[in-house]
Image 1 (cartoon, rainbow, N blue to C red):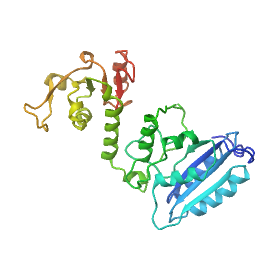
Image 2: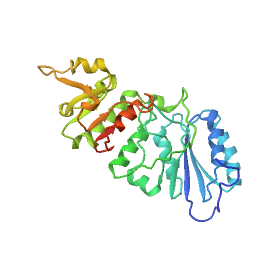
Image 3: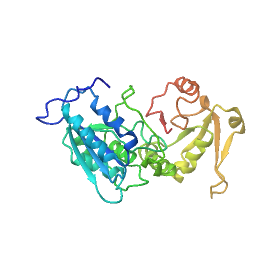
Image 4: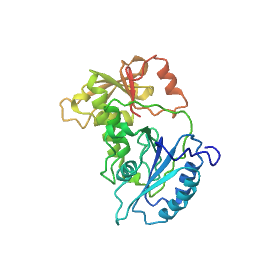
Length: 304
């Protein structure tokens, strides 16, 4: 954020950045959201493209108020609405806001976001308009669809990359009415497992699951039978799990039931699928991983 009044460039000529804001019953936080656009210090041309998806609260009035303020500082505002009785969903609202905009680059500033995650590292996207349409827009399945995660996976499938900005760029809120709470945890998990199998495990002949606890076993049970057979071991630091020596897949219909060895991480063979969340062990896990001198993407893949 920077001081007021430096957001606008000349309204003439091509717009460089379109800020894409889908809205549905967002009056509680919409003022703060749009104020952040008003306070930006971007020196190029910028427009706000906002799509109001059948809001029943005071969102429309707030949008009109900020339209006046933003245009005073050189930020043009395009407003689209779904006037039906039912919202069409986040994916639809985002797509409509993009279609009505004109910027060379798109910056997504959701006022209606996310679940069990965030589903991606952060819910803010910045990409070119050309690439957005190359990827193919957001899924418009509506309630219960993780449109951001599906877009991200399609982006990667088509050769896209990711650049992480190590700065605090936004305030992220959960609230009971967020559209994202309709996305079930199981839906997110299943999409993630299928992506892991397609993008990573398809090129591995064998691998170790790093975590012999709940999350590691859940991943194993979620894999296809072919990928389960590729699991050579679980590894861990928990002496009780290691001493037991193996994990028996009781739900298996095979006879005898599969027994997967459990060993200490130092005795395990890469590549690893890591099911340990970062920043939750006081640095112990990160230190252990660092001692192995492995290369991410080749020797291990973070599933959590």
